Length: 366
Image (cartoon, rainbow, N blue to C red; front, side):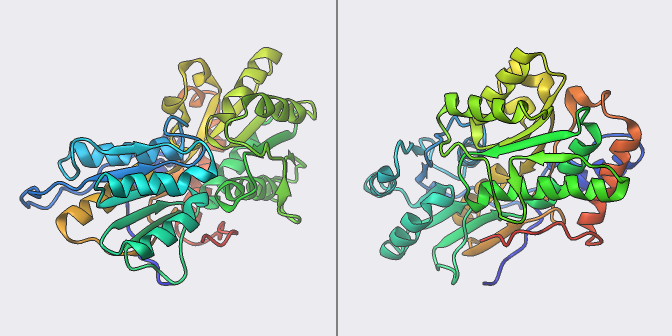
């Protein structure tokens, strides 16, 4: 399937990498867009509808980022002032929610998450006059009225794994996810391979609990909403000595933070999707070592603005380290805790991935 690669972030990404090499900030996906073309605002604003997966719009992760993108489009005058938000409480809600979007006059529907792939495909085919944008899923062949936002997040996760291996005091790091689906496991796989790469480079034996690259399986809660199960899953990994944790699945990372705090562990969390330092409650800010970021909000806004301006095209947009759509957040409260030499190594590693000198894309994104 032909993929269109877009550079979603400006030179701040490269600037941050250069600063890191000198002991400054880490590579970040936070950046500004190029100046907008001087075109008149569209007269007829798009009616946009956003359908979440089971984690809901307040998941502090990819649903929240997608909904932010819709609101950014609204704020910049590309979408109707009252976008529609329909949250899915069960998989049986996907079709009725899309029906609700259509019945309320939506002309651009954003569906969030891998599990909405089938419903998006079916409804796009049945409604060729409506544009669809889907987050974290792609179709082969492309569908004429669907834009797919997908991410090679294992590239940034690889660098995060290297960082975690260099920071662990126990020699054990851990990870768990909500479901063993590609958009979750890609983080866990890249993270684990980054730890193994550190071991190869340093002659160490840092162990990862929660993911096996050979079996492509690991520890999963089976839910993005069961916080009790997330807590026990995290605690089981902490029992094996882990002091740095990568939970993947929205707010199921917070019970892990509670467990680390309750046990008095001198440890850390690694976030996913949106910068967890800002996305999660302040209670946990000192735990976030770094976040593996995806440029979801910007891509969603771009899809809507392209539709409003008549420049919209279907097909996949693959976000990579090279085009700035995946990366690492700033270190925030960990800036002074991470040794300068390790920060420089992570920066150099990330730059090598950007330049194609190191291939850290192990998972086929689809």
